[in-house]
Image (cartoon, rainbow, N blue to C red):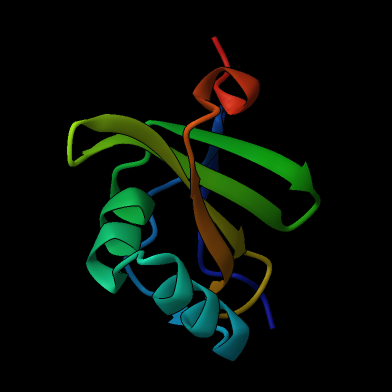
Length: 99
């Protein structure tokens, strides 16, 4: 089945319809990342990056407490409904942020 998500010159468009893989939900709870944070990043990511055909990273900088973090959401978009594979936050923003 063909994916319904469009690609433009810089990558996939906003994702508003998606599902969480079971492992992703477990890891997000363990890491303290909410469904709403992920939804916000998928609909308005600050950056996207393809890591292999069909799998993209959507990421945004966020302030939690008083520290800046990068939340990275890994999504398989080559499915009829995109699947969130995992999400995590890191303080090592410069390692993953594209200029």
